[in-house]
Amino acid sequence: MTDSVTNNNPQLVSVCMPIYNRPELLKRALDHLLAQSHENIEIIVSDDCSPNEEVKEVLLAYAARDARIKPFFQPENLGELKNQEFVIGRASSEYIMIHSEDDYLEKNYIKACYDFLASHPDYAMATTTCIVEPQRQRAAERGFTHPEAGEYPIADPALLEVDSPRARHNSLLMKIQNYFLYSGLLRKSVYKSIYKNNFLDFDRYYLAGIAYAGKIATITDWPDSAFHRGGINVENDVYVERLRLSWYDKIFPYLRQIYYSYMDILFFGRIYKDMGLIKRFIFANKVFLLNVYVWLCRCR
Image (cartoon, rainbow, N blue to C red; front, side):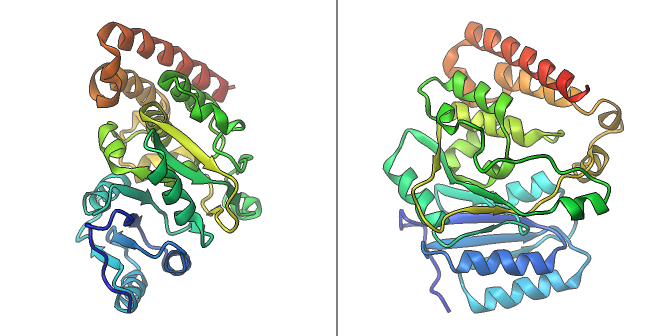
């Protein structure tokens, strides 16, 4: 059994796993995490009241084998965002990674990301390239479509490393092509500085906030460090139910995200207050127009 990690070691990485009802995928995800070349990790796993008892059995069995795994079991279903907040609230490290049980990592992923962030204090997040599993057939069988997804978060990841926070923010907002970036290695202080709310496509705005807070690196020179993305897209109605949104989110799925992204820049998000009120107002209106443009493109 591996010895427990402590928060007095600066190399500690907190892997935060909000999970629900997928025991076989959980096994694969944990196997890959335990095989990471960066061994100083804690794996905080919160099961969101899964109806399948096998989830609890799997998690307890893995925790008995390796003390780096810290299992939690919710007595009632919290929902995705609250369960995510729960695990991050128990992270001991400044370096956190949100990890889903349907994704997995090659052995040097955490080491590549940690080594970069630890030596680049002006960067908020680090990730590597992404491998998307061939799931179009399975998605089609379930009646969903699976869009193209590149191996980089945006086609030109250098745009996320420019000096201008607003330029980084808008590049990610408009050009994101793969949401695996949501599970990049992130500074916890940055995560806490970003306002979070339930709405469809929340992750795009969350990631844009991270891009504003600091540069985002896409590391390409490490072997065996790719991120394997396993999820498939689902229809908006399914996410409305998962996120416990209101009925009007089914009818007007993007109105809430446009409203909250506007209010985030003006009032809610601490990271934007460095601009001052007038600059925030101008920036919020520019982002509002960009969001309307994206919404109109999706409605075509």
